[in-house]
Length: 443
Ligand code: PLP
Image (cartoon, rainbow, N blue to C red):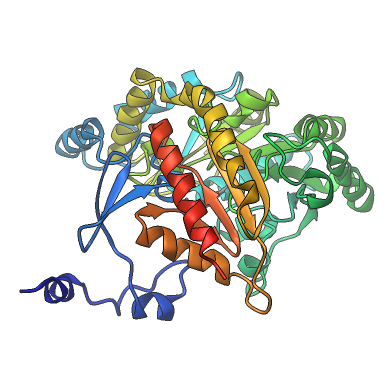
């Protein structure tokens, strides 16, 4: 068989799988298949190496094909493949919660397991409502999110989310939104946290004045907005949100589905920014992306208010998933945490951040580039939309980079970079140099 025939023979039937967040017709006309992965690299179905510039989907923080995780998963499958956590328990779920509590921000050490970021968000929103109700303030049900926020795809998550395409087709729950912090006029090409924009937190005061604090349960933000194109918080912004929430009895939720587990060079963004929420949502890198899992980290105050309320013997929180604390996912998670610990990955970005910042900002003079933002091991690069064809340049960068052996993420005309935390300085150079070539070839 020649190469083309071989590829054709290996290509699966594409019809049945309805792909998520994908232009299905376009994709199936010209599929892009990643067939295997190891370390920093994917390999395509036609055998080409692709450097992973995105940690899969912001989740494979320790790199691909980690044997310790595979072994732990296999061992757990053969020991206890599944057991419920409703009115029953199994040892490894308690061990994993304890291990997570040890790396958690101070006080956020009560762990509720989910299977995804979306489920973590919906769980945290419910916890916020349950907390207020347990304290006799059941009228606090309104949630506040932020423009450009992404909190997954559950009905709770899209209600507090601020990306119009994810919302316009569906009904949403009562929620209001403060403005986003992207301010090109004052903050373009910021290195790290932008200087201007802490005052945008004051939008929350306006919303409180509109609805009454006594109707508001929680404010949710991503400490660094990820899916919207990497928007680090302005200096002083998160502190201000915290203060306003405190002044009005509103819970603050940080959605750390992307920023958790070392992305900024600390265990969580909460540590990095030194601002502690009441609830913290996580997923993705909790198992290095290898098995679906998420976790909500709750403060003692929230946990105790809910769990100490109600009569003895009654279920305190009517919420949970068949796979909350799945034993095999817990095994993957424990093995992942051990790799993070052994290889110092949760703090490694601290050593890389300067090289990263210098490298990505080196693209400032590339054609079409209108803004570059970075923090930790994340970067967003905005391209001017081609007149009459918004998103075309972004998509062409995705394809061009793939052609040249690097995976990046494109949302509209924004390119997002977030390689695994094991990336080398040389590989950072390769990602950025390839990007320069591809961007330079754009029309
Ligand atoms: N929250 C944030 C901040 C995210 O970035 C994501 C996914 O990218 C989610 C929630 C949703 O996570 P999942 O896709 O696992 O449901």
